[in-house]
Image 1 (cartoon, helix red, strand yellow):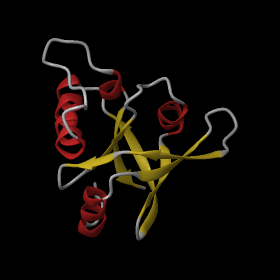
Image 2 (cartoon, one colour):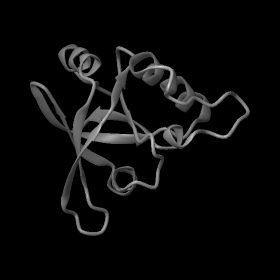
Image 3 (tube, rainbow, N blue to C red):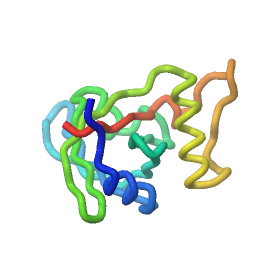
Length: 125
C-alpha cells in the first residue's frame, strides 16, 4: 500500500490544523472541517477529540473517503478506522507529542478515550 509522499508527511507534521472534507452519510454533500493531524513519520492520523459522535467521524465511518487539505496539497484519501486499542493508544502518543499533555490517553486495560475511539489513519486513494 502506497503512503503519502515525504513532502506531505513533513507538511502535516508542521501544520497545527488542517482541513478535511467528508461526504454526508445521508446526503452525500461535502462537509469541510478543521482537524488536528499527526504523523509517525510514515503515516497520517486524524481524530475527533470529542469522540465518534461528531458528524465528520460518522461520515468517514460510513463512506470511508475524504479530501485532505494541507498547505500545498489537496488530495482524496481513504480513512481506516483504528479499532485496535493498542494502536489507538500508540496514535494518542503521536497526538500528545505534537499538541501537548492536554491530549487524553488511556492506559492499557482502561476504556479508550473518546478521541481514541474516533481515530483514523488516512491513506491516499
